[in-house]
Amino acid sequence: MMELLPEELKNLLPKLYEQEGIEDQKVFIKYFFPAGNWTWFVTEGEPRGDDFLFFGYVIGLDKEWGYFTLKQLEEININYLTVERDLYFRQEEFSRCLARWKLERGG
Image 1 (cartoon, rainbow, N blue to C red):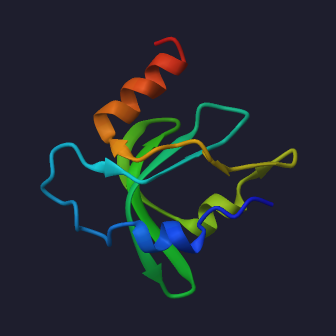
Image 2: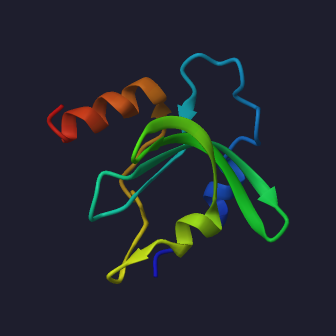
Image 3: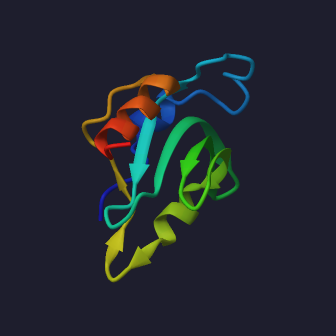
């Protein structure tokens, strides 16, 4: 199974609220579910107990900013398909990530 949060990304990710007030926050990690449109753009995160709490933009049933945990991502398993980290993702501003996401899906 793919490591969703390797140590180098964990250390690179700004802590929660560090990008607060920045209009076009930088996205550091992109997760996706390969059998659907679900995508998570991670802008911040930090350890919480034995889990890791992220903040970012989630595209799923709705499109919204919110919190989610590493465990929540790891628990998604539908017919042996699991959430993956985009290994080719390069950090950039959220507006560019969203524009690319729309372009990739033809909308």
